[in-house]
Length: 97
Image (cartoon, rainbow, N blue to C red; front, side):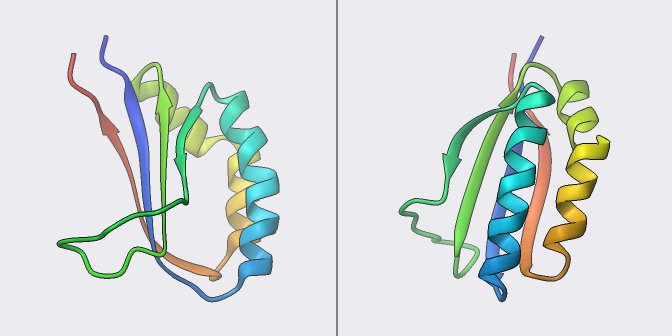
């Protein structure tokens, strides 16, 4: 069964305090959902999409697990805290088998 990934690229961060509060809630929610963080911030070069403020890559054992984690109550609480603090492109993608 192919693994699945949350891929999130932040274009802008307008409220770092909200982002920090989101991080405190999102981390445990992701772990509870079976996610493993591979990339969180760090150095990046964006060749095609313009400015990349922050990039996140999280692996899950299946696509269904990744979707369930995103829809979980705990992660929804994290999103409510994040609110309008960032502009990002968030995707759940299935890996190759």
